[in-house]
Length: 442
Ligand code: ADP
Ligand code: ASP
Ligand code: MG
Image (cartoon, rainbow, N blue to C red; front, side, top):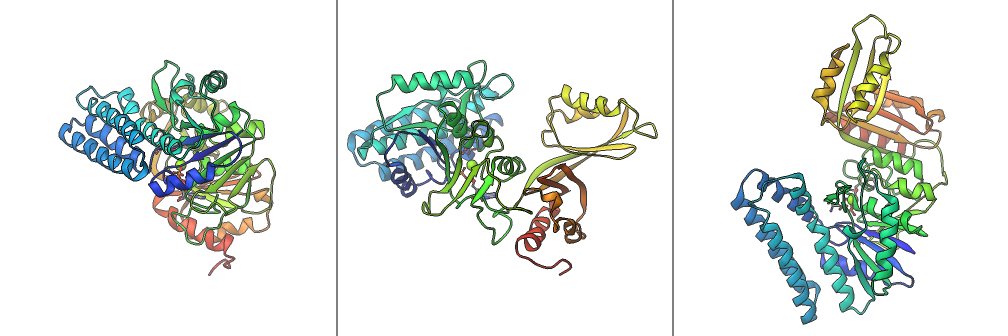
């Protein structure tokens, strides 16, 4: 079986939903994971924020506005009268339930319940479009099989068992449609896989059914060698290895949720990125094969906080690093980059939930400096650290205030820490030098 995932833009309009229908209307059984229509999850997050701020009137206004746009979409998408009735009934019930949240105490569960509706809406509407067109499609409710455990990892055993049972108990279909992003937690409460999590849903399902391939269909023709949101003339890469893709996704390449690669890498299931709007473009194939050498791609991750921890003694005493790591372990905060000198350790984190407590504990045995609004720029490529062009990077970036460098942690990655205000210039300079062949010093 194949697993397909279509993102927000791919299901974001009636025209695009019809493109999706054509793409999946091929022989062979498949599971199709859908995101919410583009803009919907953001709108629901905003509504949840208004409820939290007790801005009841504004929350109701925005719920009604969103409801109206969905009502219009139904009529553009579906022509069959009885299906229109059915879809309208479903959409009305969803918006009634969201309106019912307005006067309730705002909790994480309430928030998660509200934001889950985007995927519930898109999958219901799309399944009825397929029915109207005579395709044999069935809905598999993600909340009946997708679950994470106490450590927020997918509960693979539970997922596999329940997904298989659900497929066996559902009417025979060629196309099984399910919601991306949403799942249950270990207590059985509704939660999600974090923003952009539908990609991760697709690979978790791919691993559970040992799919032949997982295809992520989006609004661009594959994984590009630099971030197209910040840099012009980026190019799609035809191949990436699991490690390269995982590293780039973790370090900010928005095309993939950071965890997406993990489930398929273990089972060696190919992961293919394709463009819904241009299905004939090659896209990117991600496997365990390594292609090419030198710097292959660059990504940037914002929202980084740097922490400099100085030993109060003159030298880093034996056992100092252990004490530092124990503090981060206690607060379950992972470290992205790390460098040490004789008297200090500098490291970066992206989760600042426990920053205050971390700092307090570290200050018991060290002096601590915290800098926020930082970005990590990550360069990835096979044996990049040995490539003859690599040393010149430092010349290219001589005018950029590089705050930290991780070089040699792996052979295939170099990470640079810069102020977020310098991120754009750093990416653009690297683009010109690395991919457009501009000479250093120009
Ligand atoms: P979807 O809604 O389909 O999940 P996303 O917006 O999450 O789509 O991801 C696709 C977007 O990721 C692209 O439109 C592009 O702007 C952005 N992006 C960032 N870095 C990259 C990259 N290296 N390659 C391709 N796209 C990237
Ligand atoms: N709809 C969710 C989001 O906007 C999940 C996804 O699109 O992957 O984050
Ligand atoms: Mg996405």
